[in-house]
Amino acid sequence: MKASKILTTGLIVSALALGGCQGTKEETGQVIGAIAGGVLGNQVGAGSGRVAATIAGTMLGGYIGGQLGRAMDENDRWRANQALETAPTRQTVSWRNPDTGNEYAVTPTRTYYEDSRPCREYTTEAWIGGKKETIYGTACRQPDGTWQAAN
Image 1 (cartoon, rainbow, N blue to C red):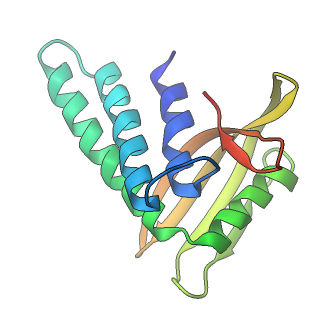
Image 2: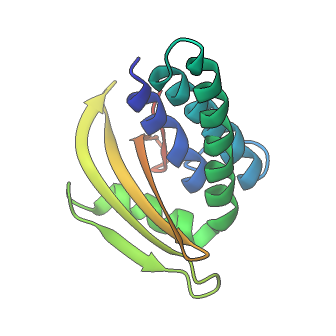
Image 3: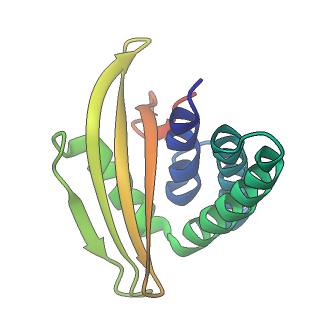
């Protein structure tokens, strides 16, 4: 599986908590972000630099995933779920959380079917504490209507 696909699948699930996650939002985000970052780092590193790139990717992915997992509240996750459910491809759904001041923009980029259920690739931009993070994800609709990270 390509590193970008793994990163796509992993990072946003932590931020959006799209179904089935255990532990706190921050812990889930850190774990998934670290895994995705490590895989990506391993793919871009070469020779003896591969280990360093893997470690750096793991640390950065864990940090970003934890920040996003901690920052999104229930309302933000509901809005992200609605964006995946209703927004046409390439149409951005944006909002600002009045309680936290964080801003989010979810853009579905491709829709396809897997095992007779709709799946969507998407980009999420998050402005948390004045810092912008861009995350790529893939999720599939579950029977209960929620969206969960695709494997």
